[in-house]
Length: 449
Image 1 (cartoon, rainbow, N blue to C red):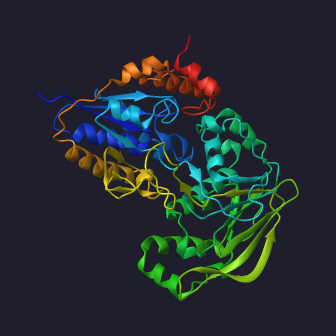
Image 2: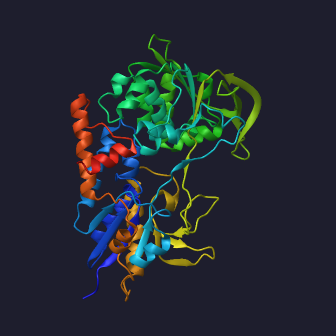
Image 3: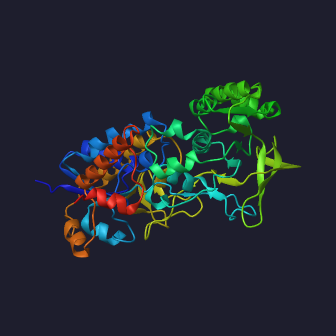
């Protein structure tokens, strides 16, 4: 009888847990899957990336929970690759490793003033309002009246929506109590959402866009001249139903009359950030009007400039993955080189027993559900490659972890933290749960005295 297949999955977000699920379902023989995460909590982007007011999307955590409750799957929280375990450790203890660490940092604008206080990566702001422990003590100056959000993707829409909502509108969500208090004190009244290209190239979904128009305490405006489509954009809109849906929604906002709602969203297109200006902190944002070069399809400047008097700039121009210690990494595309999830070395040859899934495999594209098919592809290749393995792993992970005295968070520990957040929400009369966001509070909740 063949020995069980032992696989380590690094990252407990959707990609990692879909990979664990695929291993359990696809393997013909017995399989043991250990899922590692540097945080004490599972679910990755579902917990720390999906906006708190998107409860229907966040409910996917219930599905992912069933994966962690499978007898063949174990959770090891507070264990970080590169700090607590090395790549060599994993390959000593497992038949194969799947890296699914996602895309954790923001891309830069590359303009003067980007490092001024008040110029903020959207990833940091999202982590803060989603209760990520690394961002629990971050502060954002919400005393300013005007804010610019650079980007026209779904993350940018989320950031705009959270800024435009009142604290009462977010009270029933899981945002940490200190975040709710900060948002309640916000003086932000005008939010500029800015895209370098035109409305036909906007990356947000029509559903996300409509949500901005449904905000009861914020009005939204689009300039009619921004909706004049060049021939190339008009062709895109004609062929693409998603683009047509966006254009229809946006056109509806060009005729939006000025109202008396307390907050206003200005959705702008054809503007490229040129400089963030300020003495000691952000005071304004200089922009250049752009157009699409029909010959090249690229955006070019027109030489027309304008300056917005904003006190904070939130940069939402994309995520990128970071290199994992010892694992091949493409510094241009910010992914691990791979073919169908099989890791490739610098020479283009397959690296034995190492695989990738999710954003670190394909880049930050798709929705949460995209990771399911992506992970299944990786697992098919892994199982095919290891079908004829004849030697078990050299060491046991339990012995290695014990020898290093690591304060591991188990799935049972996570359930304690989960229960503590639910009880906190009950005590505050605040919906289903309120997140604990600070490391110490999370650790204490994992092992209550």
